[in-house]
Image (cartoon, rainbow, N blue to C red):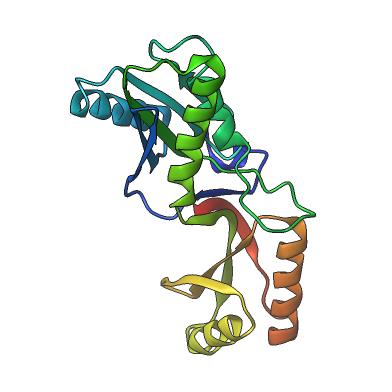
Length: 229
């Protein structure tokens, strides 16, 4: 899937690709929560398998992951726990995680994440309701330790200009809040590569600023998109 195929043009991810870990103890059972940022289903499954090997003596290694801007890849596993008491609650904890303090925004767009909860059984049964709460709380606890950041889809554009004007225009664009990616120098002209949030309104705003800066002499040729963040 390319960036052009996604319906969403922004979502939320973990800030880094470093795994996060936390421990929750309930009635002598240990629930070790893990979370990691992933970029594909294959990466998520590889991470789960790595934890299975690490915790080879654990009673259960339950997991859930969500991948993609549209969150269209959603998988979960109870790994031997009673059906519906581990994987689905873990998945729901991801899907319902608030990612913004704005009360007017849904703020539940966390994706590209895999969570795993390793359980060492302590000898006391928790019951179906207790397991649901335990696995949910284990994911909530590990996510509480994470730093979340927005991931945006940028629309890239090129502005053709004379060599002599390229440096000055590049500085003016930055001064007016326009993201300048790079400047490409060809045989006959320079091309300033810019990026803006992938929406008609953002593109129109850039075009208006460019027209004002150059008295209408320069235009933007919009091209591919790119995810950043």
